[in-house]
Image 1: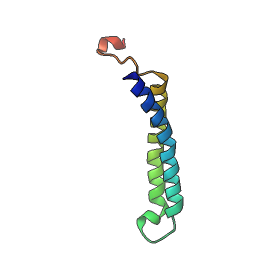
Image 2: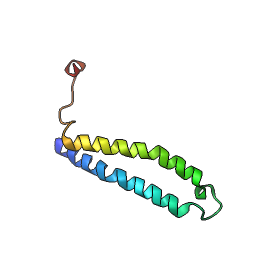
Image 3: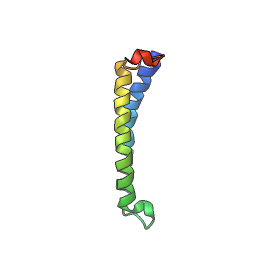
Image 4: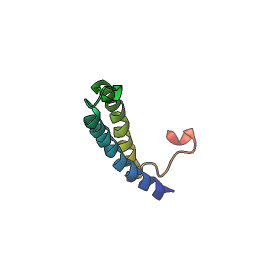
Length: 81
């Protein structure tokens, strides 16, 4: 199970910047090409501002998973102290 956690940590670290890249490229491609709401910059700015911290959080989560921080999880609240 710990090996799966480390593999998924690596996957999260790769996926997060790729998602941000595709969001920015989608914005660059769609802004100004038409009259629909998706072609205006404001929705793209909002989407990028919301999803960038989420992607950064996934990268941090993936880093800690790859590092092995989640190998031993507490089973009770007494182990937290």
